[in-house]
Structures are given as C-alpha cells and as structure tokens.
Image (cartoon, rainbow, N blue to C red; front, side, top):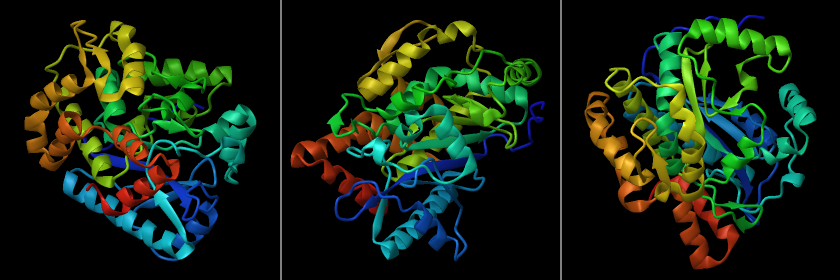
Length: 375
C-alpha cells in the first residue's frame, strides 16, 4: 500500500525515546523482567509511554511532544522516578548505557510480540544480538520536503551525536576499543546505514518507497534501520544513532542540541546538501564509533579535517543563539561540558572499570547514574 501522507506537526517540536536495561541487583546481569515490570506499571498512569522491546531484559520509554528543555527534562525525570520505584518493588534495577558490558546474547529471550517474533525468525541470532540500547530523537517538520532537507543536511552532524552519546565500550565481557560498540550490532541489519539521497517527499514516498514495497523487502518505514529516517505518521524525522546515555540529563541535552542544529539549518544559511556529502559519511561515522570525541571527521563541504570534539565546539558557537531562543541554555552547557571537559559516558565507564577491574561495577555505576544524575 502507498506510504501515508506526511503528517502535520509543529516545526522543531521534540520527542525522546530511551531503551533501558533491566538488571539483577545481585549479579548485575540482564534479567528477563519486562513482563513483570510492564504489568506493575499498568496499574497506575505512567507519565509518558512505556513499551516492551526486542528481548525481555529491556523496555522503551517515550516522552510526549515537547518544545523546550525544562519540560522535556522534567518529563524524563518523572518517568525515571516512576520506573525506579517500580523496579525497587520487583527487586531489580534499571540503567542506561548502549550495551550491557557482559551479558550473553544467547541467553536472552525474545519478547512475545508478533513483530519481534517475526524479526527473530527473519534475522536469526541477530535479533537477540540486538539487545542493545539506544536513544531516538524525533524532530517535528512542517512538511515532508522539510523533513527530507533536514534528514540529509544533518548527515555531517551524525558523528557529533554518536560521540557525545557513546556509552557502550564493553560488549560480551571485553573492552571493544570502540566508544560505541552498539552501532556495530545495528549495522549488521541489511536496511541500516543512510537513507537514499532525495530532497522531495513526493519522490521519496511515491517513487522510492513504492518501488521498495513492490520488491516485498519492506512493508512500512519500521523496516528501515537508517541512522535518520522520516516518520510520516508523526510528521517528524527520527535520529537513531545515539547510545542511551547514563543520565536523563544527557538525554535531554542531546535532544535539544539536535533541535538547535535543525533550527539553524532551517534558516538555509548553510550550503544545500548533496549526494557528494556522503563520500565521507561512513568514514566519519566509523571514527565517531571507534574513537568518540577524539575521532577525526572530514567536513563534507570544505573537505577540512578536525577532531569531532573541535567540530562540536565550533558548532556550539554557531548555534548558541538558537539555544537562547529555544530556552535551552542548560542543554548547551551540558553538551559543552561533555565535549570540552568531562568526556562521554564511554570514557566514564572505562574509568570505573580501570579503578575496580570489575565489570559488574560498571553496571552498578550505570544504575546509580540513572537514579541520581551526574555527580
């Protein structure tokens, strides 16, 4: 069936989704507690949305539509507090982080939901290996054409969000030497990567998507695991490259950083995106995953190289007026602290492991950080 028309939403409105880990309080391994937690949460109104994810050891929470940093962070904190209380009743814990540092994928149980079972049948062991945890950010677009413009204009900023959010240095019990090992699991899926280059919604919906649907490969936009994808039912684009941070404060700051960049892009003050921008896309994305803020990125327009950290700080100077007009200066300060001083959460987790030599200590710290916020 044809792709639905691009929905109406307020430009630059925000929605945040966080995939979270459910862990035991003794061994700090993942625990298959999603059914029990969701049942307990269903007894009272939840300050947002909470849904199951691919396996029984994870859940996803989603905010409502927000436009400013303060109410967005307040909603995330409210959901966090509700989850923590429910987990305490079940004697489990909950935390962020893009991967669990020592769980074994073969021990995970797929959540009993038709779509997840279908994915498990199609992708085999990759489905259980998809027990990784990301933050998705939706940005409202006034039209489908604006959505496609923003989607491709954002390609040069994708390394920023990978590096700033990176919180998955350990996987299957070893240090991967990547700041974001999570994205390696996502890249294994055949419809991952980047969206095809087209700036017209009509061309995308009525030509590209129609052709893809006729192949039988896809049935809906959910079948695409692109780094950024349009969501016509919401009237948004969805950024999908972020690891779930350890704190809701970092999650809110990342969303507002994206909002500020989009606000500047919509002023059309930067060169129009072109297909050639993607010549360096895979290189830049790998550098961000592997080296985080210290990775090297190439500007697709000027061909100049600099560290991702330097590019973020330069971008913050350009978009600072947009943080002001969007009333999100605390988000600017959080991003600047991360890039200029504190580092990302992958760096923090490695420090914890270096001090303790105990992989369980990283999970303990992740659970503490979600409950209490940054130290």
